[in-house]
Length: 569
Image 1 (cartoon, rainbow, N blue to C red):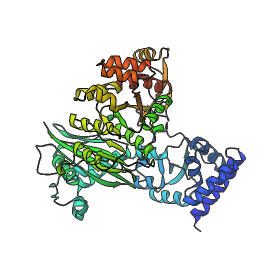
Image 2 (cartoon, helix red, strand yellow; image 1 turned 90 degrees about the vertical axis):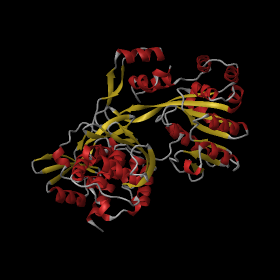
Image 3 (cartoon, rainbow, N blue to C red; image 1 turned 180 degrees about the horizontal axis):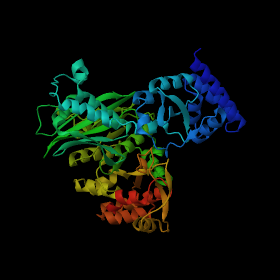
Image 4 (tube, helix red, strand yellow; image 1 turned 180 degrees about the vertical axis):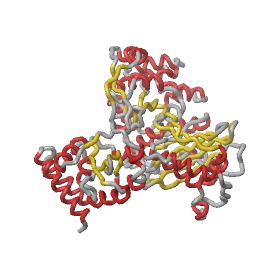
């Protein structure tokens, strides 16, 4: 038995007794957590947090008193760049440690395993300093490590090397690359750009040529942030590397191209969808990140209020008809559709999809990828699906009249059809079908429901505090909610949210179930405004109202609702 194993066993036993003595845990909870810990090999404290038997704050407090280890509030701690340099990023991520500051000959390190003697010895050997472990007060250590270690300096360093070299000739597929190519500075730099984007929770990477340089930007929580500025001289080598990865034509620069690739980032498999186009200063590339390790959410986890969630669940129990999810690009439509499909798996029905691209693979669903070179489009794919005895069909997107017509016919012939469509709100999605040439009487017969949604930034839970808002925000809230309020939860900015005050996003929804009154109005050619007024009279909560409820609950701020939703009404 190693020293580390003995230490960990002693730590866990003492921790367990302290939690029982302080009445933080019931005996049956402790026994269940111990059994899970032995079965999975995870530490006891890790299991206790996963099972939500304890909060991170309670656990840190108990550990601090029991083992005389100080605690630190990571969200407020000012990291010293000199401390970060003493522990390499790969070591910090592997052992879940974060160097915080230097005090004479000691290095203060945040860790959730402060009594692991072997780990402390390893960190001391690497840093050549005495290690002073501290416990993070409210958890979030992994998030803090990812936000603290940035690859921007290394990216610049590698690409400045490449600027002095001739761009590597790469004529082989990425899976067959030679060792020389794999070690090229541009190859390393592209890898680091991708890895940093995934760690920063980016949804897209923009590589934008300017007159004097190249900007790499990450879209995080819907907002573009500049990550690094690169020398202009490596532009072509950088784009060539991305094209090789994506199976594009590296010799073609004038025409827009699309491609994609998959790779491992840490222990996660991630898909990337790539598009390039020529701009005034050279080719621009946008890389969409499709993280396959992110599990499909349940409908109850999307942010739907109880009323709209009940309506949506009712729509999904309909044996046939068409349900549309609408909103602009990047509003989370695919996530909602996948969550809906997830509730329908295991119902003894044949579920088939036609998508572009297939973003998440379901084990029990038959999914078809659009492939225009093989003449597999939404229309041809949907027609093929109709001959394969489907019960439930997902159409990734209705883009044109022909696809809309086939989807409506599928709904009218006894199938439950789910699809996304670009429209401003739930009513506009219905009028959009009519504008595409679908007769109103067919729309009223086929469509059973329409869901509109947006994504707004979520207030950072680590640094949120009650804050006065602007007069514009207060007035918008008062107009919608019919009550006066001037203070809302907002993020001050901390280490976890990169001082933005926001961490992640939450959905804002509008769920319309078609009843007989609304069907009659559609058939009679009523305007979108009239239909919306009737839907609200019947109890439909608009996205504006749903957003303000979320602001009231402290999930977002009124300004986010104004920025993302108000313009549509």
